[in-house]
Length: 180
View 1 (cartoon, rainbow, N blue to C red):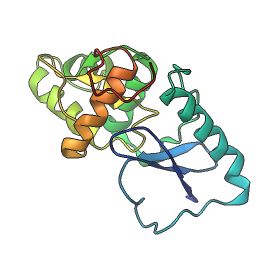
View 2 (view 1 turned 180 degrees about the vertical axis):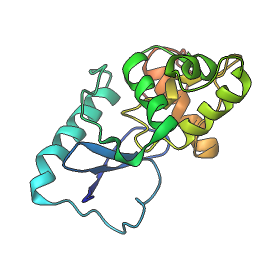
View 3 (view 1 turned 60 degrees about the vertical axis):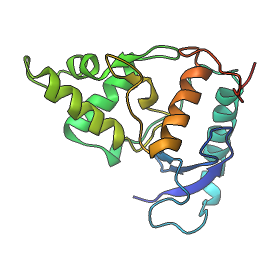
View 4 (view 1 turned 90 degrees about the vertical axis):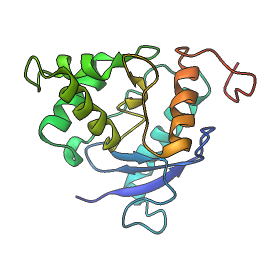
């Protein structure tokens, strides 16, 4: 699979986001410093229009002017139960909505009835392995008794809170840096 990488500036506490696009769509989005096996942006000229579309739509989302990214997702970095759960999340949980880990497990149809606790933990692991965290909104998956976790440690939790505040799920704090 051939992937072009580029960086998108963001107001997120984690800073810019690295995005990978393939011929099929967005294959990766991450807030780490560098993409896997990638030292610098390597955008093919033929992928520049895709990159510009991604930059524009993410910018509009972060400015509070877009509720759906409407970008194609290349699912090839996912498989099996992971893909089923992520596709269920992508299809069924919209802007400003949340779902619990257990409810997402149930919606996905991947897990056996009566295995609620195990299924909820499995969904938590799947959220942590989500290769396209903004397009497949794992920040909208929360614990039954609170916000739950998010990859990236403390900064990751700040990102989750920031995104949930942007979408109106959480009230803005005094230090909110998002759109008003």
